[in-house]
Amino acid sequence: MEFDKITSRVGARVSGIDLTQPLGSAEVAAVQAGLDAHEVLFFTGQQKLTGEQHVRFAHYFGEISISPFSTNASAMPEVMTLDFIKPTDSGTDSWHSDGSFYERPPAGSILQAHLVPAIGGDTCFASMSAAYDALSPGLQSLFEGLTARHSVARLLERSSTRTTYSFDKEVEAQPPAVHPLVTVNPRTGRKRLYCNSNYTIAIDGMSNAESDHWLAFLFDHVKSPEFQVRYRWTEGDVAFWDNHAVQHYAVADYDTRRVMQRVTIKGDRPIGVGGSLGAREAA
Image (cartoon, rainbow, N blue to C red; front, side, top):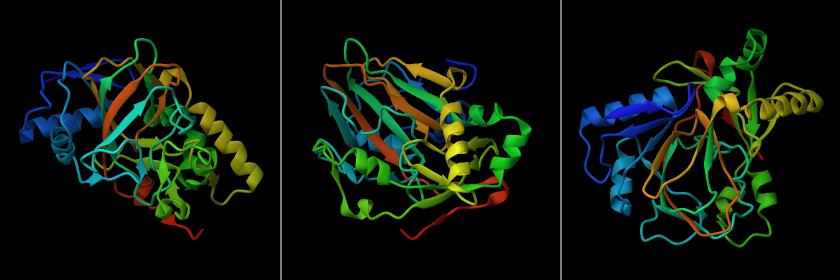
């Protein structure tokens, strides 16, 4: 198995592994180490995975999360099919971290391209570790001691007129979750920013004006090309990303069919500096 860096800060192509086959413990450990190092991995030269093969690979890294956002029906509830002819207003074409409004946001996602447009349909990933490292020591110190609230309300408002998704009532009722603004990879100790424009609504302990100011600064900061990799899909490619370490952005520049198959891995509560945790707030 080989890992070839795509950029100096985020992303690597992985070769020498067949995801349609069971993996040994050494291979699983190597993939996990590669994910910790590069934060998003792209497995090239892969055959299209069946739902069973996709779930088996994901299971090596944790329990499977079944999304309450349903698109095209799948024979396996663990497997989501994202089948679009034109981009929708799902919030995927903005920088975000999946499910940060949950007390335990997903740990990661494994996405395979089954049909890609001739032009467009790339996905961008931005390293929140690199974004943290680029801050001045003073801002790093400021943000390390703070928590922020994350809510699904903005996505639901933006999606209120759509029929593509069906939003589960339980998710609509989700109260805001509170997470550290700077989290830590529990295996490596590397620090990373944890906020995104889709779901982060306020920084705790600040006035509205202060919170709005610093969130606007951070939302702009994480857009820097120096923190990013833009991936052009080939059918069969598989992306595996650490959802606590990167944000992603599905580029909405295509007008022919794009079909992706995704399995999501359950996560734990994000850990802050010194082992601190956020909480669940009442609505």
